[in-house]
Image (cartoon, rainbow, N blue to C red; front, side, top):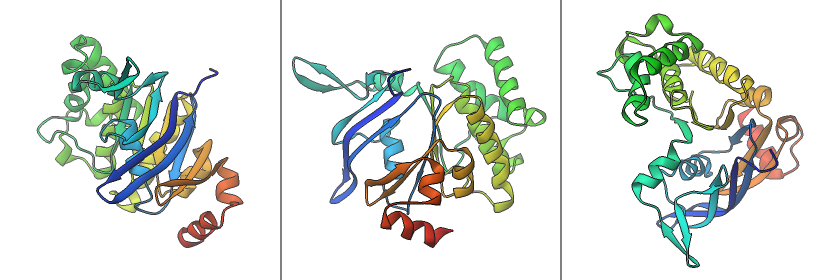
Length: 254
């Protein structure tokens, strides 16, 4: 593919007086695993939320699979899309949050089939079979009928990943998916993400797990104060950073 799956151009986003994103431009290519690193408040999560249209950008543009997100150009002017149109665009992405956001009154299986059944209107037998396969893929087939309260944090996050995959997205967004987990549970979630990366899924991952970034990422992007400071191959950015701000950040966290 000669075009990026995600094209971000001169994106800015403010919350009141605070400028969360400052003229950010970035390409994410099909099948690429990109890790965003940086201190809290550097703009990483805001960028993901803008891609998934949970936050509207102030200026610039984001294209996913060649389609401009959130707005439509008509007679030389940009018009905000309806919530229904935005919802249709959002189906192309799956997002996994820090908190698992599972329905507490539904089993693991029911959590996974909810979207394909209610949003996509697909056939129940087909959706159930796919959901069971996803549970097997994340190592939780035996927990299909368990409720979130009966699962560990790591298991809940793996169900959340399966739930996102059930919608068959072309892009997976991960917002610090292990930060709410006890240390002994982090590895099981990262293992699922590594397998997902091997399968060719395009992934944009906000993470503090630099070992994961070093092992899995095709590219690492370091952000600071709402801007991209440095980007490149994981071995270059993490092993031999060029920018002083990147060096200072890495020396503080490694």
